[in-house]
Image (cartoon, rainbow, N blue to C red):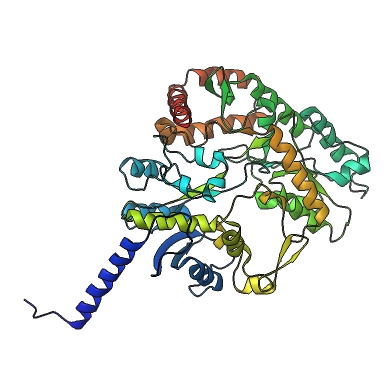
Length: 505
């Protein structure tokens, strides 16, 4: 019976018993940041946006391990193929202890939730104070169809997201005010095209570096939403979510955009223009406006100031009294049900540490006077930070606290620009509108939504480019109203909305 037994086998058995003892001894007290006397092994899969991922011997990975009594084994995946890696990993069933789902609502994820593949964290999260500091939107918008939370949001600010920014120095030169309505914006963009704001004696400037793609309005999104006064494709009217493409204001938006295109306020090639090409226009001083997050306006500003110290892109507070409020998350970390309950609690404790001031700053900025210096509250990365791959774009994708001003600052930004951005974010927070349909489940939308969206966008693009008369939109909307797929989607989206609303009360 013991013929093939070896001391190696004995060591393996002892090791297993030690691990089981460790897990059994790990308490669920969310107030502690350690993991008992033993070191807890934690397997994580996440994305990185740095040129290279942190290595196994990364100094900050090791430092976080020391402070939390854990050993972090992180599988880093490029954003270029992260979605594919998620699909393969979920299908394999071999899911790490903590796994970032870049899309929390795919058909595969919904099915696995229904099958009980992930821990329902709803009863536990209240015990972790730093996670509870996340905005309520982050937790509401990551609820699954049953109204429960099966993941820890990769938290993001709710204000300061994608909206318009504009050349403030051009406005000043032409004696114009910052536009507050779409009518005022049109006047501004027309002046940018016709009144030589760059002073080179040529009419070679573009008002707004807008573009569309095959399935969305791209950087014209905020403009159409300003007309329909809504964030996302579904607007709440008389207690029911209605698709915005059926609203009369959408036709007003398309007429505005068609006129802007005809008068060359928008790029001639807006249907094929890429994001990088549009940004190149801004950095070359050829365009006066764009759509991006608040802090992203610094990117072209910084480039232009190399030759023009007065160059300045200023984010708008709103248009027609509208500005979007974001969902408060960008994916979520799930814990598979194969993880024992006591270890699951320790993983929540680890993530709670990562959402603390200490844990978040350590992950994003590293060690003070080694990876960053601090000046009037602003952390400035050192060359050592680049060498050690210490950045919010890497470990900061796993461990991050909620910061309402996260979208106010970028490296190298002057203090006066930072303070202006904070004020803009504060003003937006007073009026911003959320996407009420974020994360709502519609099986019909999962099945045919992309194709329907492409057909709608194709019609919008043709109307903006003047390939069809604007009257064709009326005929198109008439057909949409009786489209069986859209009718079914509307029914399912509203049912999901009512279910989620009831779960919040």
